[in-house]
Image 1 (cartoon, one colour):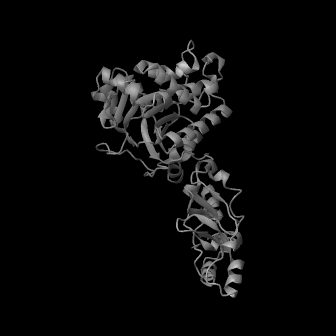
Image 2 (cartoon, rainbow, N blue to C red):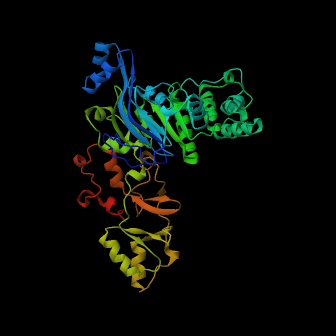
Image 3 (cartoon, rainbow, N blue to C red):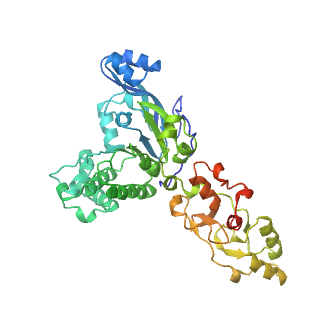
Length: 436
């Protein structure tokens, strides 16, 4: 899962009006019609006539109609839909490889429609790179030379472009194949070269048009993992096109769903799963593997009780009983986990009238996870210790994941199965033992 989970409305988020101050890319009312009867096609689309009927009446195709959205800096933004939904047209509009019929696209506050040819070339050279489905490598150049190519066009000094290309190849795991030619590489390796070329160009934005669709499933999974890792480290603004919903859910900070050229919904993967905008979206996401989409951050809870070493064991034991828990995390002043104190240890200390908790009695009967870890990786970790699974970020406890929260999140109809994690009446004993 991508490291970033941005908040969104989860519904038809079209962000009308002027571009937001923080947006890296701001799209407003974007429309693209292919054919001669442009005005007639737009008028019909405005009246709600479907794409196929517009095409039948006018001979023109409304590829994208009245689409608006913002992309934030450092966001991995996925545009997805079925074949013919307009997603590839939309991504080509974002760098003016094709011209829009109407609407605006701002990149860093600059209206792309106002750029002349020289300014547009500079934008593509220095600010927006593209990774293609078909690799688009030069077969007579080595891997290193392909990675350098964008910098060469820019006029970068040979020593500098070589250094940047070698850095990029190191990032994608191809440093040792720098002198090979594309024809000597597998499809997955060739796609890595294409990605390295984009990274070497050091642009702010990467546009990736179904880059993995031609790869076999195992290589595709490796490339997805590579992109997630690189995005954690580099924080590029990435627009990723795919027709694969599971891929979109895995990679995207937010996802824009298109149908027949129209925006249907924008939101995070969990938002779209929990609140589909309409029946089309609900049907679309019905077969998604929720365990691979939802993460610890999506089911995190505040711990009911945490403890400091200077607290009185008798008082802590009372609080533990009120929380129906058998243990609690002991934290320092920076919320770093020192260990776990169990109820039997507290009872013994209270019987001895001790006034603080002895660090020597703390146990390590707990497990932790990162916020972006998918739930499928957590199933074997929850419910096996006196405290729930801890969510740790930068070494600090930020929350916990009770077993009931995981089960509820993985069930489409949680209420029907009695798995509401906020309802104590629906917990069994093992759940009560780990609510702290």
